[in-house]
Image 1 (cartoon, helix red, strand yellow):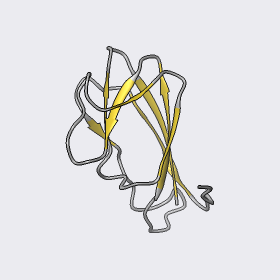
Image 2 (cartoon, one colour):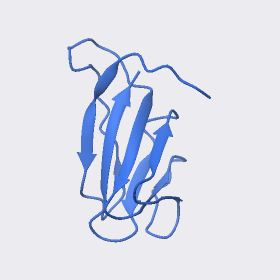
Image 3 (cartoon, helix red, strand yellow):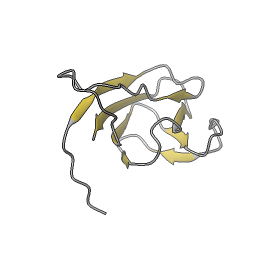
Image 4 (tube, helix red, strand yellow):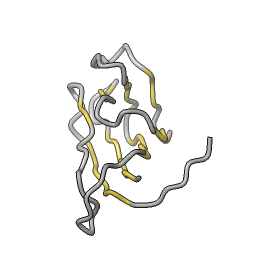
Length: 98
């Protein structure tokens, strides 16, 4: 499925992933216009992570794996997705769009 990205809602880097972490979802874009992002582009760096979006926190051994260098384009419920590192020092780079 191709999705048209129309408006950037910001960037975040998540470096504390020793416990399950959610995305920080802004309610305005960088220009101050109210709205809600609907798509996240998530790139895994340094160590692999796992994610879940079913309301249950992932663990280091349970959840969908995301390997170092992989990119996840996620357009589900951005408030439900959570991440955890499989090995210490994982990092995620996230760009949010509507």
